[in-house]
Length: 386
Image (cartoon, rainbow, N blue to C red; front, side, top):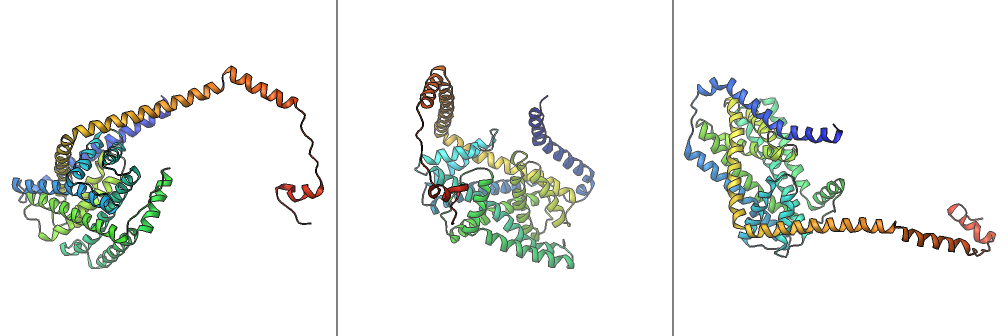
């Protein structure tokens, strides 16, 4: 078996085996700590579960609204319905193997509204970077509330306060257009992609980031309501902590790039943060909440994406046809290039080239007269002053 096949199968095992291991570990932890859960008031509140589901649906809709705002600040205004349909329906393609199809689909789809491809790609980059940065920003702010639930001792309080302040300041500085643009283009050069130009002012980026903070607040509130649905004794002081836990857990799951949608990494981060930040709640509850939040948020995403996909099915088919045509065009160009190189090596071409070389060798080369004045300045490839 070749090395390439082993590497490919190794990646498949990691991508799908790791989530299974995480799920098995969570199940074992819940089983071992079930007595602690059963000794407390543990219930399922369908009304709160429905409200949590609605909160995750609202967060999913906010993604398309924020992307519409980014495009508007770049000079292109899309209708509200078109923005939501393009964003959500293109996310449906994300479930197809490969990590770039949703990007290409959105770029081609928004191009039908007159948005250049380079600007569409820039809008997606700004949307993603501000989303990740504000997730870390919200978590840094939530650290200020950890002491209220007695998760920190007096000696640790100052450290977390200082860390929170530094993290907030770092995010605000990193979002400046000059710094953000430089970091983005450096990353694009490392992956051999064309650089982008951020035609945005600092206040534009801060305005977009503010809306992302609201989106994380909605998602964190849904996560908190989900905890209440299972554990009614959860204190209100846990609300800002839940907002920070979910935002950072989403970030960690996204940047893992190993498993589909960060499966396993997001759950592990949520369970770990839940244990450290909310010691007044059972440890096993953190594992339950990590899995349950993934299930509910995924169902909300599938609902929004499916509705948008079915609503724009005709345009999706047109875009797929365009993608197929572009792939055929690229394949045809590659075949033509190969044929041209083959033709250049044909016997007739070689005969013409040989004849030209013989003619050139037969002609006497003209003699050039050279003097010290003409040679000395160029000796060794540079001039010398005598």
